[in-house]
Amino acid sequence: MKNVTISMDERLAREVRVEAAKAGKSMSKYIAEVVETALHRQAAGGARRKTQQDAIRAILAGPEWDVTEDGRMPTAEERNARR
Image (tube, rainbow, N blue to C red; front, top):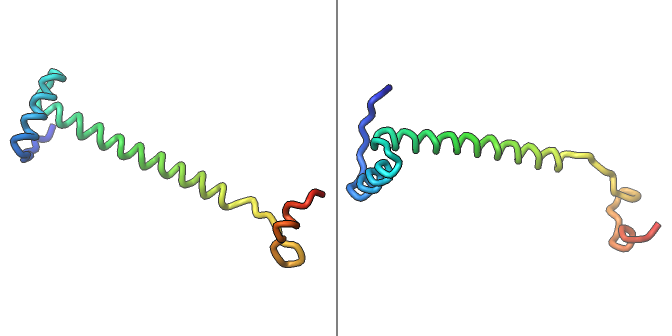
């Protein structure tokens, strides 16, 4: 286990002390768990974001449909015509 010294203002230190006491933990243990949880959430959010981006890319990538008629885009009437 590595010892780390941190600085925080009095108000924050008081709030952390109270929250640590409510959790029945030392301030050191409480802060370590809060930081670890934040890091895991950040990593999980990045993985989810990458998955969502991959899905969007897959949707936008294909399949490619040729919608042109005689080399031009159809008019609204042509697109909506019943066949």
